Image (cartoon, rainbow, N blue to C red; front, top):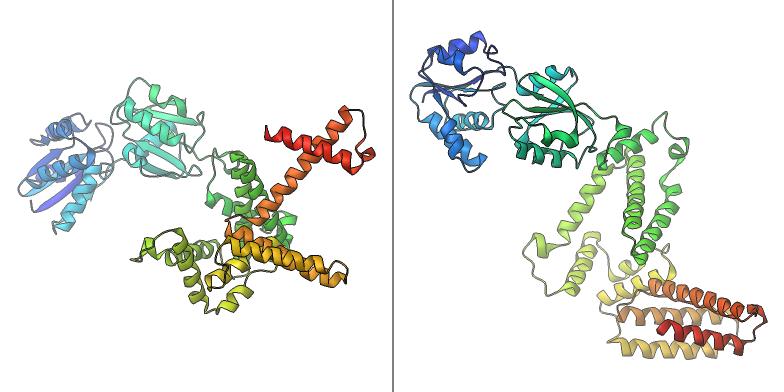
Length: 473
């Protein structure tokens, strides 16, 4: 072969252009995609043709088909016309042939025809902008329902079913669509795509753009668009008033609500609360964009770079023995990035953390610097020591009592840390348990016709122990 023409033969028998006819008539060989294409009779009247039908029947998959068809085309001598339905590059094999010709420095020219997508859109009367995929391309692509969509070459019911399954992940099952075949269109619901009775190489699906407010599902890009609109000139007054500073409380509140959903093992609530946290991230990013500080992509870029750099055992050639060494490496890399001393690391733990959480973090940072108890028994001895020191201050000033009690709590946090217990979570659960048992005691007393406030401590303790025993059964 010394020259390749890729000829788009359109959809109907009379779609072949004059320019295409001239190229086919003067070339040395003409290879047709299939003898079933509408232009077959018209082209055969111009010259002798070859077809790829047998190659289609023998192919195991589309990758193998493209290579086989390409080999067949390039085995012809002189100038070759490869004639396909549609525009010329609608066909996967034609696109593969174009790429191959260029890689071999063979001159190639595309003579376009009417595309399947254009024909389908005209058939159903849709004139807006459209993104077009073949049925097989759709499997690896995610269309944006805010744009018009045309899916071409739905040539059997099995493929129609795969297209339906793919699109119902994005659109509503009852989304209005148009099914076009052989120049005839019918209005259907998306869920009916694989129940049309007849399919061939002209079968296409057209879906008009879906209004933003009626999308079946949304993505991160949509969330960014919503936040930009809320903060816009004619957006929501409350959202427009917010700053990084005013939003801090909401981020903290939403984080606690995530923790609560995890504690309750409520997956639906967890997804909802994580969305609220993501909203706060997007909110801050939008404010950063407006003040030319940073934008959402900077946030994503920063965390991706951080995760890659701090996981050298995944993205580089560092070897680790387990999760403990992973955490040690993490802290070491983090300290190097920030040029911090060990003291700087301890000072960097935010004072805005809840006290138990901050104490745990400070103790853990000290551990990475080599300052820690040998084991939990050593930590327990320190707790006992601090308990005695607090008891010794009970008859003294409140300031001394506060100081010693703080030391006692810090020692208790270290015991929890050495046991792998989260003190904040443990204390919350203890409070929950106390509330639960208190309520049970009140209910038991009322069942006996007694008011809780009428009980002395001995009576209260008897009820309490009874409730404890019942819980353990």
